[in-house]
Length: 573
Image 1 (cartoon, one colour):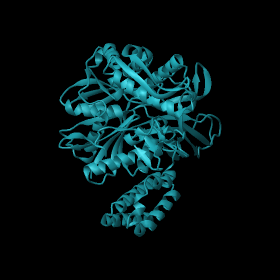
Image 2: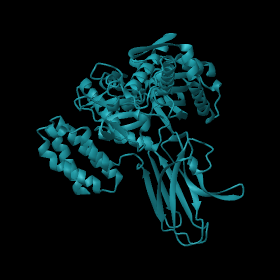
Image 3: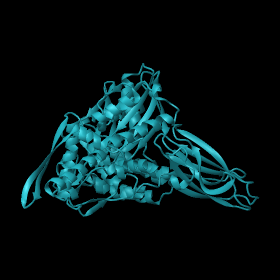
């Protein structure tokens, strides 16, 4: 059974797998290598995904969504018609479609994947991505940072070289800059910095603003915010003009069927590449700042970099390539398709994990924690005590998996409990937690009564390869401890995932086998909601997902095996 690699991008998605010693792109059901990241509801009330959803964007803007990746890990909801969805529900619909495309292409069941995320995704966003995969019936073997995946695709072709590489990953919604070293078949990620709100869509927005202003100036047409039809036309035209200006020095923008002075007209205007570059130059300069921050973190200079690897569709913009090349004075490598590099790298990671790639002949890779992780504490600054000081425990760019700890002491006499509040931040100079992102908290009781400062609490942070965080606090004098896995900040809890899963894919219920296993599934899902142990909840959930998959595929033999495992699991706990 293949483990596929998925690039779940803001603008587009790609799927890949490993075959004949190399990663290969999986075509979607339309025979295309790239799938637009659009989800919508058509006139029949059915969900449409990819190109079909993009094709209806202009006419059915209120029933179509894009750029939902930027909302992952938040509680914001997305409206499609009269229904509201969490961002991970929309991502799950996309992942389910990609899963089905892979199954059709490979002619086999697909239940596992390596999924890529921006290096700057925080814990909430990563957990939301994992929940989306669960909803889609996929077990995530690894979340891998997008620039790291791109480096894998490049490293496979340059395994015998010794290079320091700057990966400039500029996609539709995010920018990540990662510095890594390739040596003796090892890819060692050194540092990473990014901007989760800088991407190709921001370039589109500048063109949209230009079109709106010109329509007002030239034909006195004012675009209302609730004029979804016209705004959809403008967005589509802006994206097309941006692409054309990557190859031509001038682009013609056409907005069809605009009402002006009592007439229906087609608004047309030309824009030169020079005009476009002037209106987006500050965005490119922001990208330059990200490059500098990634290098500063490891005290690296431009001269330390041997080459630049560009990936992501936004790197096709000539100004972007020119700016980076001139800033670093380095060769720009574009030998790997910028749209496909991340998915290909994810497929390589999947091959390493599944044993399809010989480790002795293949690649080894290290990755990093992209954030500073720490807790709120009381500390002395310039001779004065302050509360809510950010006390760093794991430094950003530390190689993962890792565990680091720090001792703290009671603040007042006879203190018997303490609240541990955890935060993360990109800022290396962050002083107070108000400037960081809260990620979770818990109380630890059982501290022996004693004088202030006499009882020590050891706080340990662990950060795994999927970017999950575990915090353990231990009272040193008596060994009492408590821990917390930071997995509770996603929009959806695991129990909510279970409730919504059948709304995403209830096809198993239509199988002739459904009635045979219905009681097992209902019992297991009820048990999951009653359980407190996160690890056990996830194990049982994965078994239920597998059972539904076998039922859907009419595979009674394997369904019987999983049915037995579920019943044994429930009895054991």
